[in-house]
Image (cartoon, rainbow, N blue to C red; front, side, top):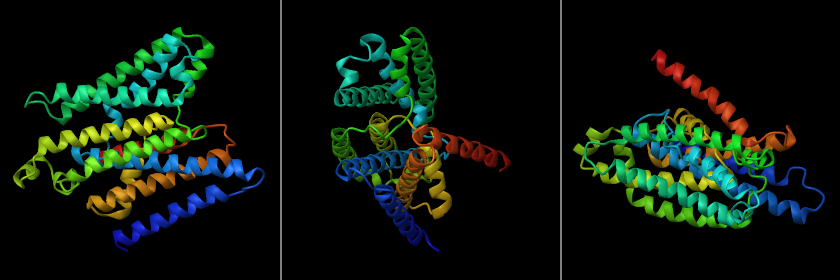
Length: 315
């Protein structure tokens, strides 16, 4: 079976799972329950699509299938922003109470951080993508440490609010945020389209891409900006899910058996949607909301990450 047919199969599975989630055990106040389930599905599609899209591009740029955008420190920065707001203003502040303001502040600061980081590190000709990853990992560790420091100092009741931000959840997604995310993701996608044609060549490596006429540094910088925007939107919408991108993109590579990025991106997005819908269904029906979807995804993704490391070590 070729990768085109496999992509169609993934699309069918994603649609069926979505319909199952929306209409399963639909009873009671349908006028209230049905719109909330639809919003959750849309939020899952946006989040899963953005993370899968960004991770596929990021792995292609770095030419490494175990590196994800989380190494840039955006997840840690998001948690730092949430904790700092609570530490400085309290959980009853306008920024924390208004999900729209909190969303815009979080996305704005994460994108601004990424732009400043790229501007500083790519200012000289000698700096490259791997130096960026190293700095991102160091800053991510610093953000996590500073976040933990502030969480120790704040009131225990305030800490509970901060802790809620540490785990991704689609249960309380604001409808306005979903519409805003759609607009931002569409704009980022349209900006990315002009660079899409270079992906298959960039996957061959920098030297081959340059020899084939790709303006490598120019394209990579713009792609990294799109990656940062998409990850920032997804993280601010429902929270950080560290291992989702690693899991779905590698599964897409293994399942589709192709290096054509058109199908890889679509396949990764569909697998991401399947994983998130399936995870959310398990959270609601099996665990009865006793855990969050990020715990399940990170647990499975962490095991798969260890498997990838062991397989690469044997190779």
